[in-house]
Image (cartoon, rainbow, N blue to C red; front, top):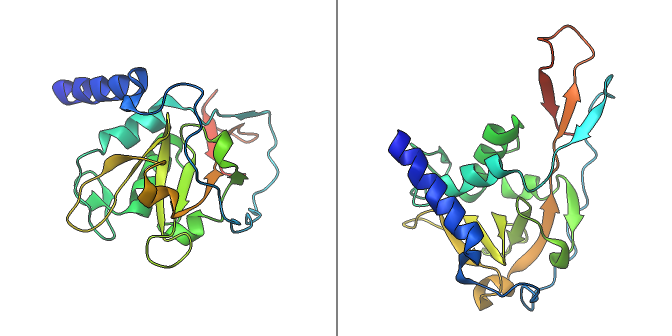
Amino acid sequence: MVARNQLFFIIFASLLAGGCGTLSPGRDTGPFAPRTPVDAVAAAAPAPRGPVVVAPSRDSDMLFLALAAAGADYRRGGKSYQSGFDCSGLVAFVFREAYGLALPHNTEAQSRMGETIPAADLQPGDLVFFNTQRKPYSHVGIYLGEGRFIHAPKEGAVVRTENLSARYWATRFDGARRIVPMVVTAGYPAPPGKPVVTYP
């Protein structure tokens, strides 16, 4: 287990530190532009009773979990390292494990969460959506930075990283969303200092 954790750390560090062998700093991520995204669905969450701290979208635990899935088999309906992943299952798994958020295991439903992000403002942890089945928002991945994203592509393939500026992905790009969890200090009896993570 220790060896596996060290391997994941080495992969994570090399991808981020080495720029994943992609675009040079400051260069545009490619000739893609988001199509009109689905409007965000207002979440019916109760008003928090305590102080609220917004977690950063560059959360290292989240990116580590996503990168740790690299090489896992694609499985329709899959949502774990053991069972494999489909694209929305990978996203749901990462957000559940990193933040305790229960996202729907459905790409189109995920495309209605969070806020719309222009392609030029992408940050690691943002969701990127594509039209891969002649249907808007039929595929999703997690942006890693430096123009790359990780996803579970298709039957017979494994979870892997791709370049957003590659022609196939650039021409199918549907837009991006940012889901920022909120760490809410509970206003009711709970273990001292233990945060409750919710989606606003």
